[in-house]
Image (tube, rainbow, N blue to C red; front, top):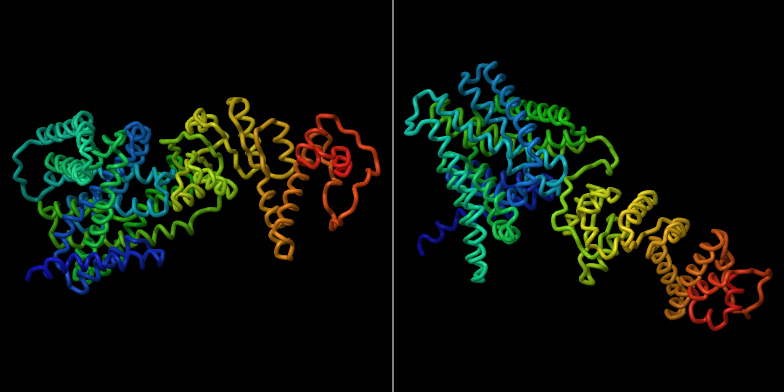
Length: 619
């Protein structure tokens, strides 16, 4: 018991720092990542309460491993294949071009010899997966087009760490004590990847089936941790990165029926360890090195971020991104990455450069990481105003298909969706506004990004399974286009639509849709009723008046369908109603029998009891 305070002092300080700093920095709009870094700097280099930052960093790197496993779970092999151009085209171009430019600058200014320049330049070309993915996740931008491009670049960078680590022994000042040839190392790496793929295909699903039958929740969690750490360790032993092993394990399980449960089991560990990783980076910062080379750092950090941003912006624009997306990517990935720590430490150990140079490089990477949230905020000021309809996200309809397909998630649709969800009905919702999809995600809604005017999107969203298609788009032209597409391609679909105004209502009725409603109609009725009640009218009387107006409106619509928009105008109240006996109309009005019957039906039972007087009074 005497050792208990010592054992728990450091974890308590780290947890306390995270709990205080993360919400504070989030509140200031700087993001939780910068909060974790600040807490680490305060606890370690400033207060000197924890001095083993590098040891904690080795353990905290598991946060990055778990992060890549969860990312892999979200990527099916088929989707990964679809991203191959961005991964191996844009990603490779970024690493090669940025690495060459930074290496050239370092060698030109004589900061390091050519060996150190190459390792440093390409190490600085790598960005922080943990930082970037955290920012994308916080802003709900992971599935946007720019988010997918940024992820493709990060994925290639994670893969690039493997050849860069293999390059260090070749550039080392002293010969490494190698026990195997490069060909043997390559064969071992290929064998490890093949073994991982075989295990993922033939062993993992049966393993989880056996564990699931036991019903032991803690065993399932242990199995999830075993898979992640086991795959990461296998890749590390084969000379590859742990993060790559975890990512491959996630991809292999992306189509497993246990994918969601695995994600739920790993997520708490990922969050805690990732926060610990950022704090450990702060703990490892050597303020003495920073102070001694302050001028160099103040020049190097903005130069690094500017060079990477310009290269990223140019490549994204050259490969088809519009200005806004290119700016977002460029200012999301200008920092050095966590794999730079690994690369620089290994290079110092091999004698490519000194330990002091390694500490200086770690400080530069750390400070560039700290400035990433600021750069991400700066990107918002450089965006051009553009129609939000042009803002694109990745179309992913995994899990779509329900009794109700709702097209458009406007204010009207949001209220209607609440009714359906409260009634226990599944609703598939698609919307073409990336901003609205991201905003809905912050409230827990699962909205699919897609254009409802496209036939392929409707099929992907599961229209064949839908019993009702609810068209809730805001623009009249868009609604008409969708309804025309539905009636031509899916004639048996039941269509419920939101109409723009009275004329639009009549147009939709002429098309024979199953149900339509003007957005403002019912809310206007309720507003008027509540106003009457506030003026002293009894509740029952106010409700009766509201119901009468609703019946009159329907009756007017029936007449207008038959005779034009000017029909039924005498049914409108233009002055206060005074009780008076029914009288004959001032002019004779002739309606067809069908129209008379529909008007009586709209007006209700009283109209059927006194058909002649009611119709006369209606006109």
